[in-house]
Length: 126
Image (cartoon, rainbow, N blue to C red; front, top):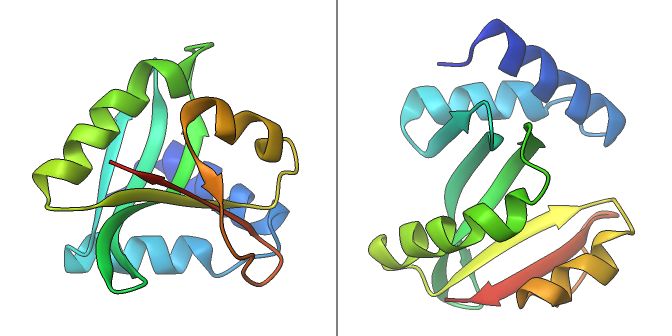
């Protein structure tokens, strides 16, 4: 269940990303148990779901909204990798329209894969 603040943030993210149905999809997935939310003041809000890519199971970072932590990726990526491995995932993947991640993602071991519907797609083996 999303808080009012999380609902508002995810709705805004969907609108900014030309993905207005994002909030409805996230709420539906959370209610069905096919997505998991992690949230705290420092990290922000992250919504994960299982995904398959090229025949392998992995974890998709579906929504990520930063909190107060200035180095959230560096601080929390090891925890997300552990979550993926514990769920028998072989990789972590995320999609974004933000071009700056083309420079940032490789610094954390992500490689860019095939774009999808105007999104840059990044993947990291775990």
